[in-house]
Length: 448
Image (cartoon, rainbow, N blue to C red; front, side):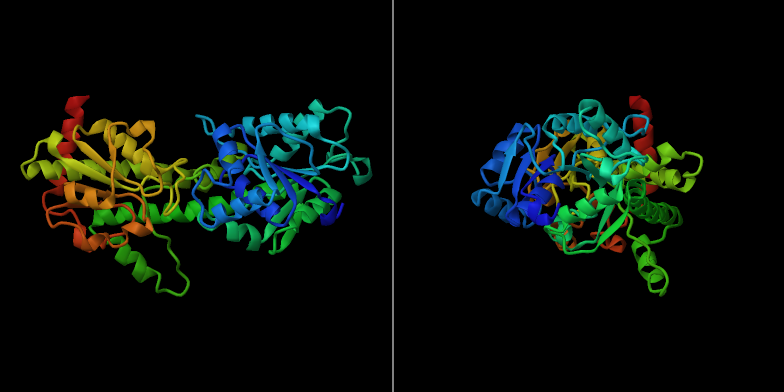
């Protein structure tokens, strides 16, 4: 199979990775069938529009649809290559949930034919690709799938694991330019997967086995999670020692071999906040540092909630009743300049604060058109309206549109800056803050 022989590609899952991937294949004049169970997403794409926020993607999708190369549907159709890009969340006990992969595998199984290749892109625990093969083999006993013991000549349908390695907000460019890990279950599966991706990928194609490819993606995100945990823990230490963490990090990073990340409100999204648990679930006794980092980052939103409660209590010390204190929450997405709220610490913070505080809430999230149901007690407003009305301003996401915030804040406003958008020297909540935090704790205890 050469790249020229790949006439039709099917992408299962048209979300933040699947849709850009489908559109890029289509941009190379390959017929692409995108499959998603979300009828709204399917209808939107078939109109040449997009249902997510991602720079440059709207143009690529429109051109692909208008050119007749991209079509979306809710049911799989025959293709030469199938790419599965569905969610892989974890359950309450942090065990990976592979039900979406299982459903996708069983959905495409009736369409498979000899010579096809199935590529799993979803970030997955080690062994997930082999598990997917079992589901495919059970559904299609008439076809031969690769295992550890089969040779390339004994295979009807090839299988590989090829994780995406992109940054939200840069997905279109990075899917093309970034190096790609290709982990086939056999050497021929790797070769065929390389032929598929060479259609649009300009970066290097790095070939390995499937299990190493799975672990590579998890390792990349666990590495980042551990480094973020250090920064977040440092912010807690600095708060206790009355040190400006932003200044401290800036000074420390002048050392030629030090590069500390910036702390935030926590860690969110469907990668860094999730993937390390896949390592822990397989090797809990060995992955102690990975698990500790997850614990640190998962606890950061609760600390931010306490800071906001303290700020609200300080506003009450200035003569306001709790129900009269207006709190502005700036940002809900899990990272700047996107609309993705999955596992967002900012959303968790906002939801907890809205549930606990009796006052009014003004939410600023420039990348969404409506608030989630968990924030039904709040109003979605512009940044200008929020700053004009709020007594307490909590900056939860460093959106580009928030960067000029310092110049528009009012002197009387109390600011909790979890992401360093405002110079913390200028907005440090100092006099009376400890008393206010104590009052907030007492109020919570009385309410309980």
